[in-house]
Length: 90
Image (cartoon, rainbow, N blue to C red; front, top):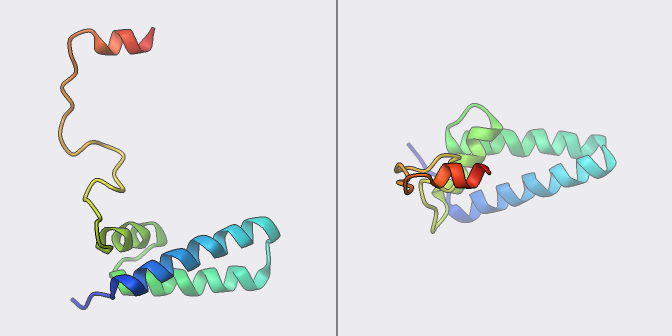
């Protein structure tokens, strides 16, 4: 599989995030069209089928990325001392 250059991916991510902010602020029709174009390009560049997966894949391919960057769960189980959860919940 061909992989997009990290500079291209970084640029696409920045464009997408900027356009999302512009669209949220103004609701501009041209911003929505451009968002669709950038989202499609990100999906093609990362070999994914939706923008959320494309953003995760693109960020993972950037230099310095770690597998857990976009994960909500720790890769390894966390060993907490006995009673730690009870103390947190109080």
